[in-house]
Image (cartoon, rainbow, N blue to C red; front, side, top):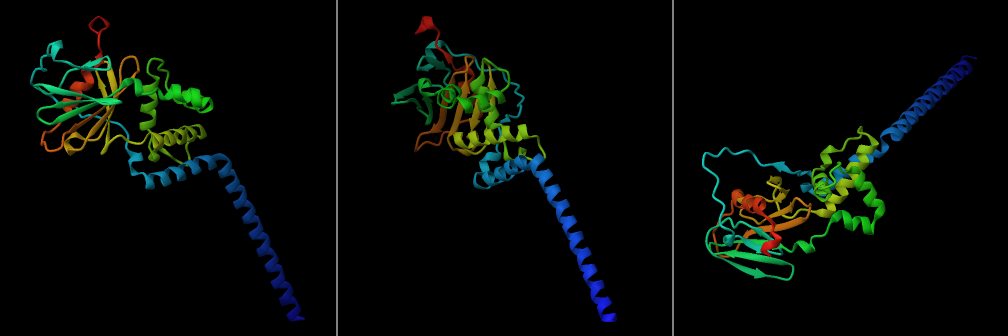
Amino acid sequence: MNATNATDSNDGKAEKSEARSAVILAIVLVLVGAYCAKYGLQTLVWAGARHWLAANPWLSETPQPFPAVASASAPPATPPKSAWLNAYEYEFIPPWPGASKMVPQQSYTEFHFASGPVIVFFDPAAQSSMLEDMKRSNPAEYAIIADMLPDEPTGQNYALYRAVYGASPFQASPFTSRAGADRLYELLLLKLQFGFDSRPGIHSLDLGSNRGFEFGDPSSGLPVAVREFDQSDKQLRFIFTVAAGFSAKITQDDISAVVESLQPIPILER
C-alpha cells in the first residue's frame, strides 16, 4: 500500500513538472515570437552588418571633416588665367609652380609636374549619374533610395554619396526602427558596391562651390583619390600621386587648391 502511494505521488510530481515545463516553453515561444515580430528584421540587419564588417573592415569608415588649421599667412595670390590648367571644358589652379606636361589618355588626362607630382583628371563625361542610371535600370531600387535622400534637388548625386559613405555597420542595432534598419541595409549594400577609391580614411570636402569626398591620406605617400561635385552636381574625379623615381610630397593644401579652384571654363573662353 505504501509502495502504491509513493508511485502515485511520484507520478503526480512528474505530471506537475511536465505541465510547468510546458507552460514555461509556451511563455518562451510567445516571447520569442513577439521579439521576432517586433525586432526580427532589425536583428537580421544587425547580424548581417557585423558579418560584412568582418570581411570588409573599411565599411566602418565614414567621411570625417578635416581639422581646422589656423594660418597666420595670407592666402596665395590667384595666378593669371594663362597659368591655369584645363581639360574637358574644366580648369583649375596648378598647386605647384613651373611648367607641366599634359598627357591625354582614353578616359582621363594626366598632368605631370617637373618635381614629380601627377594629377589624373578623369573625363567628366564618363562619370555617370548614379541616380539616373539607377532610375533607368532599376526603378524600384531608385524609388527606395530616392526616399532616403534629403530634400536637396540641386545636389542629389552628392547627397547619395554622402548618405552611402556615411553609413556604418556600427549604426545597426536590433532595437532600432524597421524603417531605420531598411535604410541602413540598403545604404550598406550600396557602400559595398561603391567600394573605396584609396585608403586609408575618408574625408569630406566643402571648398568654395565644390564639395565631395577624399579617399586616402597624402601624408602616407600613397595615391589620394577625390570624388568632387560641382555646383551643378556634376561628378568629377581626380587621383593625386607621384611619378616613379621622384620623392616629391603632396600635401593636403595642394589637393584642396585644385578642388576649390576647379570650375567650368567660361563659355566665352572656350
